[in-house]
Length: 327
Figure 1 (tube, rainbow, N blue to C red):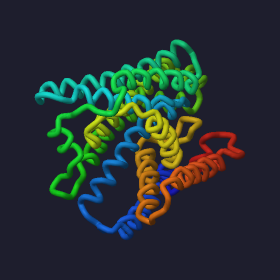
Figure 2: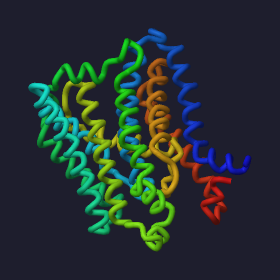
Figure 3: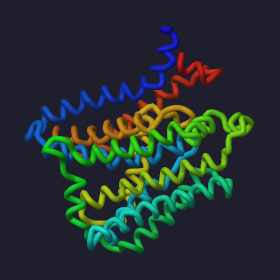
Figure 4: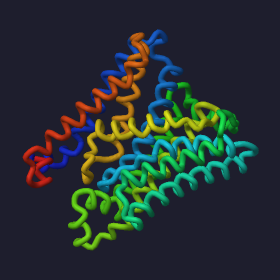
């Protein structure tokens, strides 16, 4: 029985470590912040962290199936630019605008999935190319920063409940409960893990590898578009910013690794990636409250990513059977 619990708890080791690290850093951040523990400080930190968490979730799904999506940051930017154009007018018009943005994200995911599955192109190369195309569309939609948004929606989504619980965290929780968990427990979710573990074995087991892989990119586009919607609500504007898209793409990969998802595929999950995103965001906040030069932030994030990858790779040295990772 004890051995059985070891196997059950093994996949949670990395997410729990990320949770502990984030809690320690966040407590230090609140203790050092001039305003201390306040609703505004927590709400601002939550809004920033949830943005990266959603993009990290978008990155996680293809990685689980042994792929990688280098376009998630650009889908994020495109959704922001589109939302700044269509989230206006009455409640009904705003709702239609939200659906349009989400559909656009799914469409970008479908394009990536088609190139990878039907075109049989390497995920890294195909998503790098589509990322450039997607940014071109974003630049066409928003050649200069600007736009507007339904202020009631923006204020509601970026505010808090009873001055205590940030609604952005509730949005993240809803995405996890309504999208990630059902997917994780579905046939397609289990298939993604199987494909990431061994594509030939998954094929021989009768798994529809193409359809399962295609679904991972659809979900990646959906999650990235939700993040773009939230960014528009936070900033009240849209901007085709290539540096922002590239930064979020790289940070999403870092969050995936910190959260314990293997870049080889087959193990991990979106919960760990969410916690990894919180860790990365809190690093940036700590640099600010300790009056360190913001230019140091990429260095610290790079070091965290390097250490995380190194620790994760150590587990693979000498492994002959993937079951050994859970012993």
